[in-house]
Image (cartoon, rainbow, N blue to C red; front, side, top):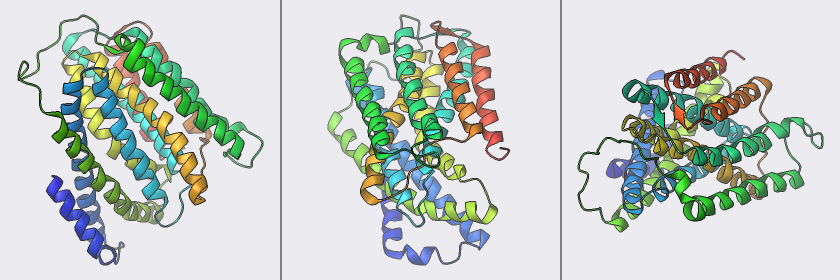
Length: 357
C-alpha cells in the first residue's frame, strides 16, 4: 500500500492539474474520487497497523496514546491542507470536530457496546479512566463548539483573539495535564480491569522491533495529508453541484481519519477488552479537541483564515445530548446491550439530520 500511495502522490504532483479537467463528467468524478479515497483510507490503515505494533512494544496506556496522537496529527495536517486549498471553508474545523465527536461517542461506542454485549453479555471498564476522559471532553467541547455561538463580542459564531487565546490555551493546557496523568501518576486508571479476556492469535511471540514501525508510521502519514488535499477538489465540487450541506465535507474528512481507530476499538470490544475501546474512542475525541483546536486557531491567525467554531442549533442539541448520554453510560463501570443501542440510535439521528435540519 505504501508503494501505491507513493506512486499516486507522484502522479498528482506531476499531472495534478490535468487530472481535474472536467469534474462535471460523472464517470471521471466517481473514478477519481474512489481512487483517492481508497488510497487515503489504505494509507490511514497503514498508520494504524504500525501504530499498533509500536503500542505492542510500549504497552498500555502508551499504545493507545501513540495511536490517538498519530491520527490527531493526520487530522490537523489534513484540515490545514484542505482549508488552504481553493476557497476558504471557515466551518471545516467545526464540522470535522463535531463529526469526529459524533462518530466516536455515538456511532463507534454504540457498535462496540452492542457487539461486545452480544458476545459477552456485560463488559467492564475502568471507571476512573472513563471519568478522566469525560471530565475533559465535556468542558472542552462546550467551550470550543458551543460558547462561540453565545459570545457577543463578535458577529456570528466566532471568537475574538483574546477569546481564541483563552480557549486554545485551556484546550492545550488541560490536554498536557491529562498526558501526565495518563502516562505517569495514574496510568492504572487506563488499564483493563481484571476480567477474562480472549487470547490474541500469536500471543507469547517475541515483540516486534520498534524503529522500523516508527519509520513506516511516519512514512504513511505523508501521503494521507497530501492526497486529502487532492480529494478536497471533488468533494468541494459535489457539495456545490448538489447543494449538499457544508458539514458533509467535515464528515468525509472525519470518516477518513476515524475509520482505522474505529476498527481497532471494535475489535478490542469483541475480545472483551472494553477498556482499550474506551481509551481509543474517548481518547481520540479528547486528542482531537485538545490538539486540533489550539493548533488550528494558531494556523488560522498566521495565514489569515477565518475560523467559525460555533455550532448551529440542531448540531448543538445533538452534541449536548451525546455528551450527557456518554456520562450516563460510563458512570457504572459496566455496559450492556441497551446502552449500545442508545448510542447507535443517536448516531443514526446524526446522519439523518445532516440533510434534514
